[in-house]
Image 1: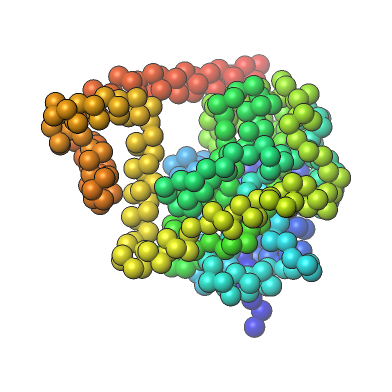
Image 2 (image 1 turned 135 degrees about the horizontal axis):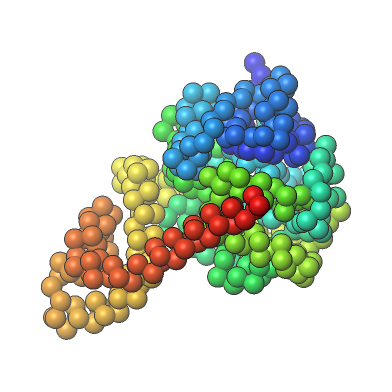
Length: 405
């Protein structure tokens, strides 16, 4: 019986890259494609309807309400992918399987993952940039042609690495977009989990950056990201016609990258083909694979899940608690809380951090934060952030109106 390898993708207006996308994933062993089209007007739908191995769903709008498309992905996964190794990617993402001595397909790689009791594959997400982002759209037929058109990739040396409290316990953040755009604080999360063995209890959470905890392979793939391919400026302006998949921060960064695209060469490495990437610092001695083998704590965590009879939702709560405690308002007032508590000037129920040191359940720690008066009095510190996001949203609306003139 043939092993099935489905792929799920939510997309809109990606006609230019689809021939290369389908060709690449068929070549590594994908047997069926499930696309959710969210309102394409560039020929994407008709093209996909003519593919024998494609199941096409349409959803005109509702992308934000569907948790940035993750709800659709999870629904399709539950209906069609249980018990199967499944790829979940965007249309501009091309998965490179773990490097071995001989070329391999999904059949061989998933057998290797199963042999080490791994249920998913962790991958860095690596931006590729065209030499001219304002050029006309191209339609490459293969990954090799796409790389020839988009030859500048972010080297491993341009990534920040950090351990995290929540799954997957290690994150990468690319500095390239920040450096090119001159927005130094914009460090985009640059890792995903695009290949998973779909079990009944598996879910992606906010995106393929985050999912229900499971043991990840000590091997790693590489996710080539071709957002900044030829025709980028044209696609960006088209997005303004229906910006439900865009936020103002992303649009502002994209405009800044367009403005400063002459600096792309200075912050990237260049390659003419896939082999050139594999000769880069990503796979050199001391490269990412060695780092990942050392930092991968997901298997030990999965053992702990069973040993302590935790549930995946516990890890989701830990992720939410970390986000809550890393807000500026909470970090800014933490030294004052500690000072007052240690001197007996603050009641214990208004020092939520005490629960962390006592290893109390994550849910109790979260409730303690909300019930302390500190959450109320730090509210004014959170107002500027909310106001800033509101201003950015109105800017996005004005940019959209201006583009229509």
